Image (cartoon, rainbow, N blue to C red; front, side):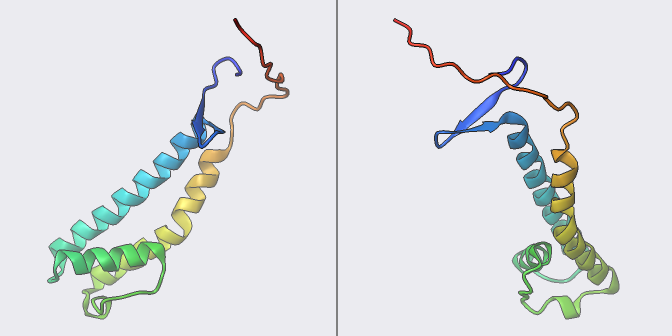
Length: 118
């Protein structure tokens, strides 16, 4: 292991800890965006929570599914759903690439030695 760098082991595979942090950051950003847009739509629109949550999640995932709420939204609601669609398509990918740039590149790495102790 390189000094100052920690790895996490999943299913007998070593994963750099910074990659785990980046994945969690993207996941939490997506969850907060969907929940935030859902709460705003619940306040501004006259619809039940599950319908609004489905529409928002569908918009974020850009899957094209709908429960028929989108045509009945106000102009603000349609703009918000459009923003969520754009953020869902561009946002996580852009954030992933922006966070994946390593500031300090290592030029070489020593091989790991397997030492028998005892």
